[in-house]
Amino acid sequence: MKCRRCRAPAVIDIRRHNAAFCRDCFLRHCREQVRRAIDDFRMIQPSERVLVAVSGGKDSLGLWHLLRGLGYDVDGLYVGLGIGEYSDESGRFARAYADEHGGKLIAVDLRDAYGFDIPDGSRVAHRAPCSACGLSKRYVFNDAAIAHGYDVVATGHNLDDEAAVLFGNVLRWETEYLGRQHPVLPAAPGFARKVKPLVRLGERELAAYCVLCGIDYIVEECPMAVGNRHLGYKESLNAIEERSPGTKAAFVAGFLERAQPLFVSEATEARADLNECVSCGAPTPGEYCAFCRMRARAVGEPIVVGSAR
Ligand code: Q46
Ligand code: ZN
Image (cartoon, rainbow, N blue to C red; front, side):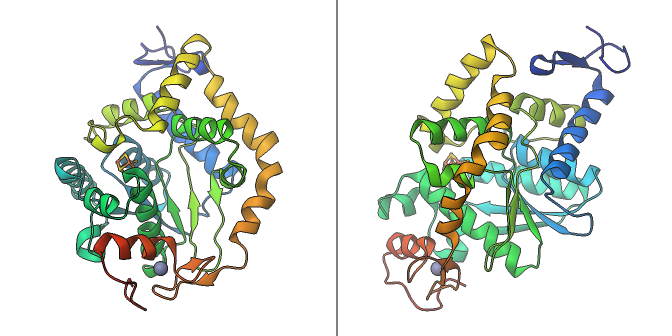
């Protein structure tokens, strides 16, 4: 197996590109995919400050490394979710990367900052752990970006993630989510811009990128992911991809090009006419934002005006 670019011995083959690469050409390929995604979707301007949501896994640490390699001004944000040993470990990997590579890492511990963690909070609030977790992370990323003056929040969602989320949204015809499923969610009053620069790279490529760059990352999956729908969608898509490489990339790219614009108005309507949460000031369609409502249930206290920020 030879590298497609330089004919040196290859270290990885990527079936959907029908190509193999040596180490250096593969790293270049990864940077190139990220650069193309950023340019195609106008994700980040060169002078902007970027906050990467870091979980300690291959995607987020790989993203931090790739963005730095492309010359962006990037810091990391780690949210301590309180998911036992998994959170302790993932925090260690995030801090170790920041120490080793001289990156600035902002850490927010959910329990210290907001009084609950994901396992207890989701149980008490009667919410599925991943739903409570997703809501909390989105809230904390946005809040931290605005509080610290970042222009954009970058998350490590890769091609496999995007394909699985799209698959789920299509199976249930979640039209509002489909309208919002885009590599860039523009800024709006109270919302920082959100971008997904890894949308052109698969999970396996990210793992290989980290290994070849010597980036240590947490390999264990979050224990709360076991049996969730998202994993089931990934497995189904993997089976399809195995038989016909390139399906996931075509699915996501075709959606973004031909179908996503049809659903945009629904998502925009849902974002219009928002009020400020009476408790924390975050944008919300109601009186209190979903995070403050969940937090109040999780900590077993009434929502206090001005309590969360
Ligand atoms: S961390 Fe949180 Fe994931 Fe764990 S609880 Fe679910 S959403 S699975 S990315
Ligand atoms: Zn609120």
